[in-house]
Image 1 (cartoon, rainbow, N blue to C red):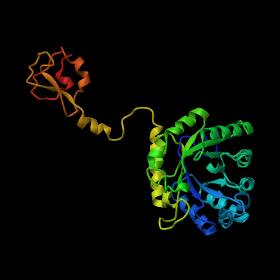
Image 2 (image 1 turned 60 degrees about the vertical axis):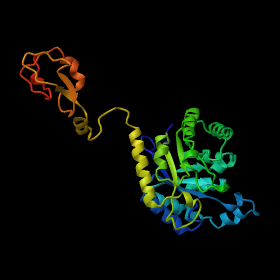
Image 3 (image 1 turned 135 degrees about the horizontal axis):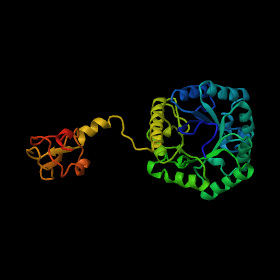
Image 4 (image 1 turned 45 degrees about the horizontal axis):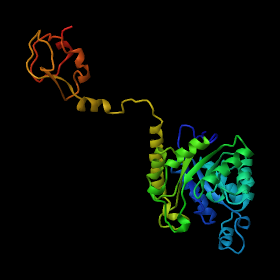
Length: 337
C-alpha cells in the first residue's frame, strides 16, 4: 500500500536526512532545511530527543543530547520553515514525549528510528497520531519486524505506514555500508510478506545508490545531507553536499519514472536508428521484368529504408514489374501485383 497523504503514488518519495547534523545549532538546522529545499527532495527528517528520557544520567550521551535539545518555539519554527520551503517535515522522535508535541506543531509524518523498533512507548505514541509514518529496519531481526508489525496492526489495523530497509554498522567502526552489503532483495521480501510500501535508507556514500535502490523496488529513499564535506558531524562519511544530492535525486526519479513504463514503444530517436541499423530487401543481381523473386536473387543489407526483411515471404514467388539493377533496394513499385 502506498503511503497516503504524502503523494507517493506514481512518484519516488525522497527524504533528506538532516538527522542531527545541526548538533543543536538552531541556525544551522534552519540552513539545512533551506538547503534541502534546493535539491528537489520531498521531505526533510529531523531526529529529536529529550535527554532525560533517552539516556540515563551517567551516560555520556545524556549531556550530548541535552546540548542538542530545541525549545518548543524552535521546534515549531523548524516545521514552519520546512513548510515554507515546500518540504514535508518528518519527525523521528527519540523521546516518546516529543511525539504528541510534534503532532501539534504540524509534523507531516513520523519515523520510528531503527533503535526504537522494539520500543512500545515510541511505537504506540506514533501509531496513536494517525499520521503517516515509516518504520526503519536497520539493526532489526525478522522477529523484531514481525513484533512491530503485529503491534502496529493491533493498535490500528488501518495504520498508514511503510517499511524502510537499510543497514547501520557505523557505531561498530564502519564508515559506511558497502554496496555489496545492502541486501536490496530484502525489500521485495518485506513488501510481499507485509503488503506494505517499502523504501531504502541509504547509508552508502554513493550518489548513484538511490537510483540503484529505486531500480530494486524502493518507492521511498532517504539519504543524509551536509552543508559541506569540510564539516564533520554525525554520519558525515555518508553525507552528500547539495549539488551531489540534487544529482542523486534527479537520477533516482528518472529511474523511478522509467520503471512506470510497461508498454513497449520506440524511444525518442529510435526511428532514425532503425533506418540506419536495420536492413532492407536488396537484389543480388540484375532481375529482368517478369522474372520471379527468390532467395537466389534477393538478400538483406543495410540501410533499413527499404522493404524490411520480415516481409520477404510476401515477395517470394512474385514477379518483377520492371527491370531492376543489381544491389538495389527493392521498392513496392518493382513488384507485380
